[in-house]
Image 1: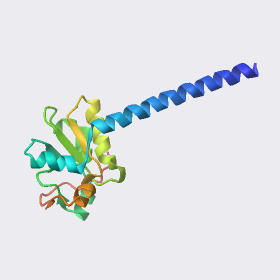
Image 2: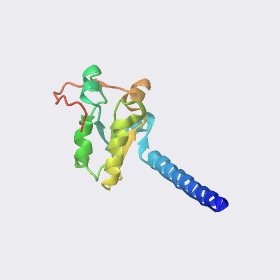
Image 3: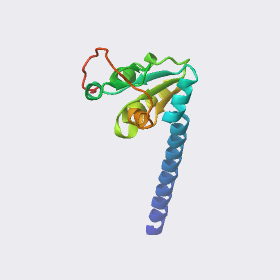
Image 4: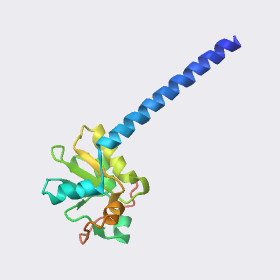
Length: 151
């Protein structure tokens, strides 16, 4: 009896590990497909390729650092998560933030992918990675609603 329970428990554990590994591999693959390095985004923009860029930083982050990638449209992460249609489905789009680990960008990406968007990517390392490469930024001068980022 004890041997049977041990075998069943081991079988369940092995199945859980296999499922978890498959999920991690799928998520890693998804992130590779739907991410872009600063160098590649810079190349695409410099070549005139039509890419819509969205600054999805929290409003307080914009207040503390009012720089933005030239041509980027600032959209609150809460707005875009609630309404992914703010990003057009039929155009290449890149979302960036300044969260450690790109949390806001990844939340937006997951929501967009769940809604069938396939032409959206997130900028790896966000605005900090862009600036670290010495790529241009400009001051963001538009007014915006100061939400707290809470849903």
